[in-house]
Image 1 (cartoon, rainbow, N blue to C red):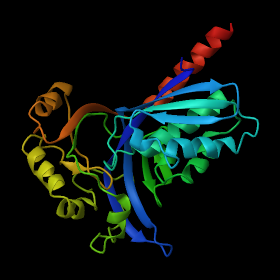
Image 2: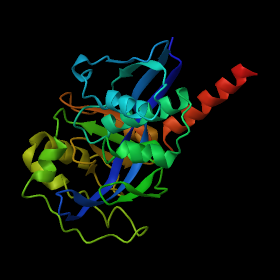
Image 3: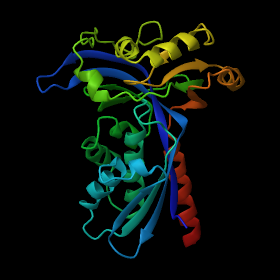
Length: 293
């Protein structure tokens, strides 16, 4: 039986601006992260030895390069006497969808093992470790919707409206590296002065390029425009391939989902300014304290 079961929620980039490129090749970004109450799930069970064992219900993701396994081994370096652990990943989020699934899985692993191994690491220390795994990992570790700058690691807490989102995955995988290395990617967006943000004053600088390279993304964008509310645009998250529109009512989003072409996948989820993993960790800690009484 799993000792600890936690969500690894999806994220949306409500906008993504590329304001420049550093001499080392990394891009300077401005983006707004918000979590969704939808994502992967991870089960953690302590072992009597020091082995770290990882499995996934998608066998193609169970290799040694998976971010879950890399996160566990990275944290083990901070705990020479750590216990062993069995980790099982229930995968729901699409690969190459721009929803941050791999980064979220890694962050949940760091948070879970900090608790299970009783490591005296702060959120800041854990987020700094997570940055070694990917630029999006720190925001998942901190668990707060955030405006991000730099390569995505400089975070300021934010409170965008927690609306309902219809998210569509047009069944293509977009490689982030391909998009950021492409010669046609815009890289000179004038910096936004936070918190002066609105849908009308923002965009996703990767969207036009991805739509030109992946026709299914363009088709999905064109389709959703006819159903999305007029007050907010249809937008791509991250470097794609997933697109989204926000709705004030859950039922309205579900009604559009029911009309989704069969070639694509989709789901409806609530935007969350606190990551669902934060709530789950608090619940787990409360249960552990109760069991000790």
